[in-house]
Image 1: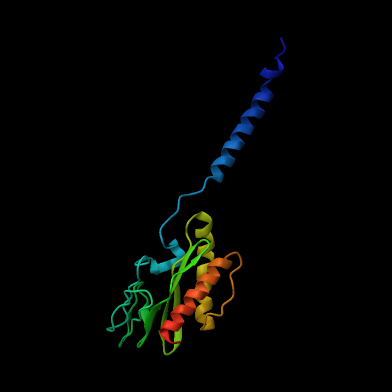
Image 2: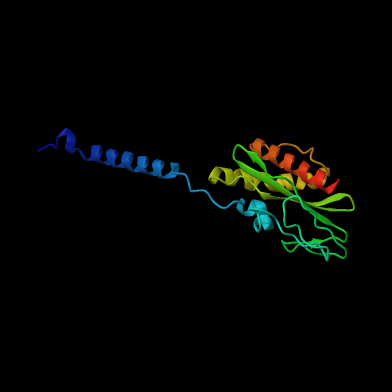
Length: 179
């Protein structure tokens, strides 16, 4: 006896494959829940204190416990992330700038009128895509700020809103530092 059309084994196999493929596509399309206020590795050591303020010690001069407050001081020291801070350096936190994908806030260290370090202490991280873009863009923006020594840095492709927010916060920090 020959199997009927609905009982044909190849038909059952094809339906099973289609159902499995559909299930896999649906699972891959699920979005991951949001994360912390700071974008993981992209924000680096700036993760501590990223909510209401940032604390960084610069020698014997003190701390910057409020956004925009300058930490200055005499003989060298160690910054919050364990990086050495040059003699006479100051750490300044720029204003938080809201972007379409989340806030961006930059902290710079200035010594001798020059930017020695720049890092984002807040960056977009609402979903997996934002975290991915931030992880790629922020280190580039950090390097560009130190290289350019000003806020006129290029936009990172694919991260135009984050780049603009970074520039605005960086300019705010530079203004507060008097650079």
